[in-house]
Amino acid sequence: MAKSIYQKELDQLLSSLEKSGKKLTLLLHACCGPCSSYVIEYLTEFFDITILYYNPNIYPQEEYERRLGELEDFLPRFSPAVLGKVKLVKAEYQPAQFYEAVGTDKEPELAREPEKGERCRRCYELRLKRAYQYAAEHNFDYFCTTLSISPFKDAEKINVIGQNLTAGDTSPAAPKWLPSDFKKKSGFLRSLEISEEYGLYRQQYCGCVYSARKE
Image (cartoon, rainbow, N blue to C red):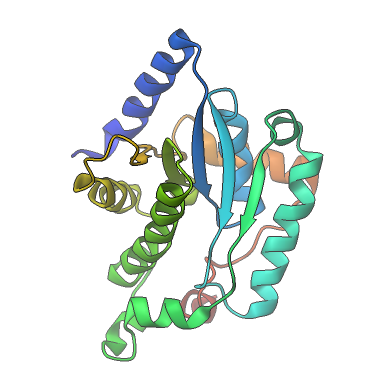
């Protein structure tokens, strides 16, 4: 599937929802407040959104807590989140899950990879699996992640993982993957504008110890 059509698929779905007048439920995995900002603004008209903050990749724990605290502080101040009654679910911080998933102990060369490589793909998959499981357990219509808003993330890999997670589940109640490339339509630039307007902390590295070392 070509990278360029994910935003088109999303536009078509949102247009259909607008015509139907239905507002569905969406579990949105989020990595931080700045990346959540535009996505919330964009989607609250169409979905009842619950944010899942599950990021065992973030290093160190102080950074994890800072990003979570920033998100918790931002949501009650951000009118689209308030009007849309956006909820926040916080997962326990368990960094061992990240190291087991990326497998850098057995494949040390992955620790030296630039972003968008196999290590990052495994990290995307870890977090999206948790999002899918939570969405399935709590009867959400759709699930997605804010990760594709970043120009440093591979939207193709993110969408393929999301599609694969749902491919084998034929249950009518199974959550669907929401196709997206949120950096499109100036989404990333809009997140920068919102971050400046609200004085949000924007981290200087993706989150894991390997990206921190490169900085």
